[in-house]
Length: 600
Image (cartoon, rainbow, N blue to C red; front, side, top):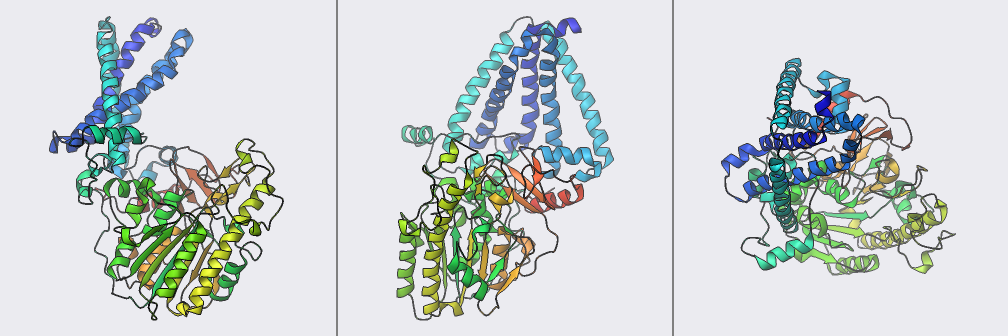
């Protein structure tokens, strides 16, 4: 055996046979759908996805190929190849049970507590049998690799990989560009998948072959087909009463760190919040980036549902309730929200009420103009204002340069991660100071028109912004889930309610169910359409889920457990040691996250 392990040619042939075995296992993820929908675009996508995984498998082998040049390391190369089908089989079992793929948190959960995954001992015995069978198959393939001294089969495999991966690249790019749910609605099933897109290629395909690569997106009706009927949202019809005697104003500030809500940086808002509003002092966004922050705010769902919504053109029940109760919708932003399908997901059929402006001052001027021409009753409006001045590079007129010194070069921390944070933080605070002035103008205008008598006002951020508070070279957002990137201000004004402060842990997912039950007259139970709670009736002890573009994290107690990167740390200290994972609380979070996945 040791002789054969030292034969690099046989190891290469063996790796080719292992790739074929991995393809067989991957087919099991989608065979049922392929069999039922044979010879349509989805079935083509499934087959071509084998090219993506083949290319991934080859890339890993190429990276470790130098091990073959060192005899003592060849067993390591062999182990890496042999491990691939075992990982896939384990992922297949976990996905069948939870509809989640393997990640570091899941692995830790299984190791820490057999019962933590909710699997009985017999399942682990079954896995052991599968492992033995798989071991036998691998031994047979190892034996087979000695019979094929020619590399013809291996070259055929290489040819299929490159051919399939090329067409997969083309189809995937087109599907993401034109929001084809019949294709991208499948990716939730695929393990270890990374989005493959190319806008230029997609548009060329549509231009040259419009009949094949159509620019028409799939409607919401494709949802149940694309996911095999497993996405169960909402779990029942949401019933709301027609109530147009009030208004809702939602002001979202880009990249707004919670610690800037003070009398020095935000004097107007601080005064309003303390005298008339409710301040939530321990509030977190649903993610550390705009996409998942706005998604959680407008849907009441964890950001991990975002891809399901995006790939299937699904809509928020919160916004459906706003439309159904007769509100006139106006969305005013400095962001066209076309990227990541945010506009289509969050604001269905909003074309006539959507206004894209070049600057925050234009957004506010437009809103103030609308206030002047509205009916005297001033009721029946849902307005969302999105202000982006505090997003890097931080923007504000010179007269708002209150905090000094300022950096000599904006964004200079990009080339010096250990730079003095004070000048950059001053630059950022000036942009917040400017936005506070704009918010003050809107609040004053509403008050003068007596709109405060029937206007519910929410003022918050989409995510926070870090300035190396962790002292590990992190700036901006989207790179971790500490409070410097996730904790945002949250001010809520409810007509007739006395001002106050709340210190229970709250999150963006709480806004939709709160407004739906209190302002829109929706009587349905929260758990039928959201993951959040009523902001004025929060649980004392609560865990959260954060998402970003590439990762997801569980906040349990004061410890963060990243799902993809696998890092564990304190919510207030990226270098802090996380507590041992509480598998019971993690299991509860996973169950909450799976609420609308129609588990079987």
